[in-house]
Amino acid sequence: MDLPVGGFEKLSTVDWPGQLAAVVFCQGCAWHCGYCHNPHLIPFARAADGPAWPKVLAWLGRRQGLLDAVVFSGGEPTWHAELGEAIRQTRALGFKIGLHTGGPSPERLERLLPLLDWVGFDFKAPFADYAKVTGRDDGVPARRSLEMIRAARIACEIRTTWHPALLPDADLQTMADSLADLGCTEWVIQRFRAEGCDDDALRRHPGGNVPPSVVRHARLRVSIR
Ligand code: SF4
Image 1 (cartoon, rainbow, N blue to C red):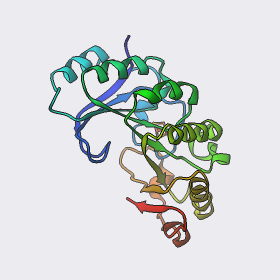
Image 2 (image 1 turned 90 degrees about the vertical axis):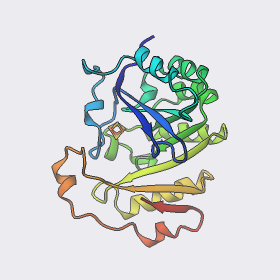
Image 3 (image 1 turned 90 degrees about the horizontal axis):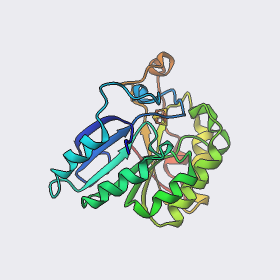
């Protein structure tokens, strides 16, 4: 088994808030978000210098007791059939498991849920309008994935990268209302950061502010980072 790894971070305190975690960046993503900070992770072909999974696993084996957790990120990790076995091998070393996902593959996610301790769910756009951010009309599977995570009662942070050119005020309002309707109580809006983004128009855009009706949503606690 060889999970395609595009990058590996040995220590992070931000990828799973509150945990000392190593982060495995899986190579490949079928979406094309204009603000992507890791466009080198979008192609499914692994870079020649990407670390091999067996080496990553061996390194993790030498960090037992020194790290709390391992986060599988991307790219989009759930595109890979090898992810489940990689997670099982990592759990066997005693690490808690976090997953960053946008939920494009609920069928695969369903099999992973019993192996997960925490999910960072990337909520991209109004479910009816996913293609405007991701380039693919995948709002239905994304919504199904979020419903499954919630039904499984796995700790989850729902977060959205926000650029006003991609998600104007009405979209943010629709997204907030959708989350509240699903029973979610918290939402993290992450402001667009230009580092790593290769879209000139997004980088040059003057920005904006999240509308007060979203910040002070009646049924949702909204944080802005
Ligand atoms: S889902 Fe993530 S990795 Fe894929 S294109 Fe969007 S921001 Fe980049």
